[in-house]
Amino acid sequence: MKNLDYGIIGNCKSSALVSKTGSIDWCCLPNFNSDAIFAKLLDHEEGGSFNLVTAEDYEIKQEYLPKTNILVTRFTAEEGSFEIRDFMPRYFKEDGDSHAPAEIVRCIVLLEGSPKFKVEYRPRPAFAKEKTIRRIKDDYIKSHTIEGKYDSVYLYSNLDYHDILEEKEITLEEDAFFIMSYHEKILKQTVDRAFLQYHRTYTYWLNWSEKTTSYRYYNKEILRSALTLKMLTYEKSGAVLAAATTSLPETIGEVRNWDYRFCWIRDASMVIKVVSELGHVKSAQRFLQFIIDVIPDKGDKMQIMYGINGEKNLTEHILDHLKGYKGSKPVRTGNAAYIQKQNDIFGILMEVIYQQFLRFENTLENIEELWTITCGTVHTVQENWKAPDKGIWELRTEDRHFTFSKLLCWVAVDRAIKIGELIHKKSNLEQWKATRTEIFNDIYENAWNEEVQAYTQFYGSKDLDASTLLMEDYGFIEAQDPRYIKTVEATERELLKDGLMYRYKNEDDFGEPSSSFTICSFWFINSLFKIGKKEKAIKLFNKLLSYSNHLGLFSEDIDFETKRLLGNFPQAYSHLALIETATNFSGGITEEEELAEFIHHF
Image 1 (cartoon, rainbow, N blue to C red):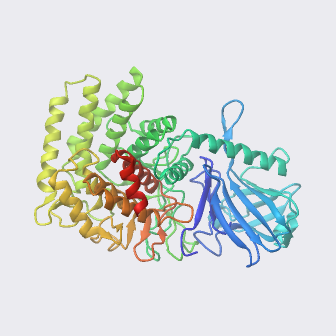
Image 2 (image 1 turned 90 degrees about the vertical axis):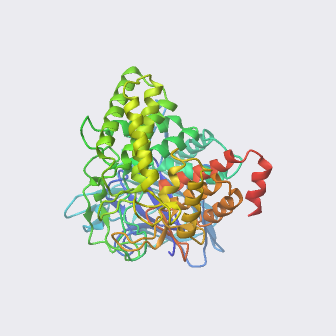
Image 3 (image 1 turned 30 degrees about the horizontal axis):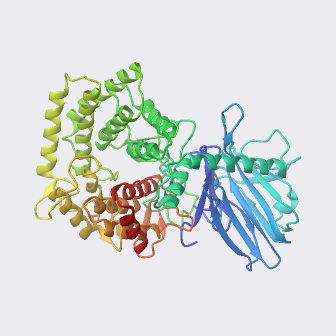
C-alpha cells in the first residue's frame, strides 16, 4: 500500500491494524508492548499476517460501524458478498469488571450468494525471529515457536482447519467466525459465542460514545479521534500510549524509526484536559494517577517517558532480521530517549498536578503528597533551569538552551505558585515568584530574535520552531501580544509548506527533516485562530483533515509532496490536537452562523 490505509481495533489491553483489504498486518499480544504476532507492516515477506483473499473482481470497502471501534470490511462480486466484522472484545461483565481478553474476533457475515475466499493465516510470534510451527489440535490450530523465545497463539473457527492451513478456496455458505486468542480457550468456541461477543462489544462502544460530549461542528471527527484515544489507553494502569506501533519511519528509507508503544509524560496534561472535557473524567483521573504513581521519591530523577506499567528501563534494541517498513531500517524495540535530560518535563509535571487540583477532589493525604512533589519540583527547577538540554524533539546531539524547555520551566514555577495559592501555603511563594520573574525575563530577552522578529528555537538562534507557538497556550504571552503575532507570522513564513508544518527546518542529528509533523500543523492552526485569523485557520483545518486516511486516522507525520501518512500510527498526540483544535473552533466563535459559514464555505 502507498499509505497507512489501516484501521485500528483494540480493547484497552492491546490492538491490531487491519488493512483496507482486510489483512491484519500488525498485532502484539497479550499487551501493547508485547512481541508482535503479526508484523507484516515491518517485513512484507516474513512478518506474518491474517488475510482473507478473494478474486480480483471483488470490490472492497471498509468503514467503522458508527460510534464504535468495530471495523467492517465488505467484499462484493457477482458470485456473492460478505463482510468481516473485526474487533477485540471489550464489555462489562455482570460483576461490573471489564472483559478484555487478549484475542481478535473476526465475524464473517454472509450477505448474499456464494462468495469465495482463501484464508492466509500466517502468525509469526516473537517478532518473526524464530521459526513457527502450525498444528491442528482437537478444536483449534496452535501456532508456536520451536527455537529461542517460546511464544504461541490459538485459532478457533467453524471453517475446516485443513482448508485454512492449506489455503484452499472456501465457499461461504453460512456465517463463520475466527477467534485468535493468546490463551487456550476453556469453553467451546462457536458462531453464536463469537456473535454474542460482537453484540456485547458493539453495545459497549455505543454506550461509551453516548457518554462523550457532542459538538455541533466536526463532531464526527472529534468522536473518531476520541474512540482512537480510548483504544490507545492501557486499562490496567491508566497509561496512554503515544502510538500502537514501532519503527514506522518519519521518512521512507531513513533511520528516524522509533518505538512509540510507551507513555510520554509530555502528553499527560493535554490528555487530561481533552479527555476530561470530552466527559470521560474517570479515564482522565486514572491517567493522572498513573503519572502520580511514577513520580519518583525526593531527589530522584523524573523520566520523560515510562512503560505502560510504569517500567523505567526502556533499553533500545535493534531487530536486524526485519526489513523495516518499505525497507526503512532499523526496526527498534525500546526507546533510548528515556534517559535524556529534558527540562520541559518539570513544567509538564506541574501542569498535570495543577490539573488535579483544578478538576478533581483530593484527600488530605493526597494534597500533602502532591504538595511535597510540588516543592521538590520547584527546587529542581531552580537548580536546573539555566542548564541546556535535549529539548522537546529529543535531539541526540549537543545540549542547547531551547526556548520550549525554558518556557516549561517557567510553567513549572507558575503552576506551583497557583497551587500554593489554592491550598493557602504561601511561605515559599515570594521566593518562587522571584524565580518565575527571572525565568520570564531570561526568555523575553534571550529567546527573542530582533532580526527574525520572532521567538526562535534556542537562545541565539535564527531558526524557527513550531513549539514556540505554545507560548500563548501555556499562558506565557497573550494572543494579541505583538511579539506572539509576529512569532506566528514568522513561523508561517519559515515552516509552513502547502498547508503543512515542519517542526523545524534546521539540521538535526539525522539531517534536515523532510516530512511534516502533524501536531505542529494543528498547533499552527490553533495559533492562527487565536490571533484572529479565523477564516484562514478553518480553511487550513479542513485541508488538513482531508489528509487523514480513509477512516479519518492520522499518524505522526505527513509527506509534504505526496501527502502520505508517515511515522507511528495511529498517533495519540495528533488526535489530541485534532480534538483540541475542533473544540476551540466551537468555543471560539460565539455566533453559530459565522462558524457555519466558515466551515461550509471551504
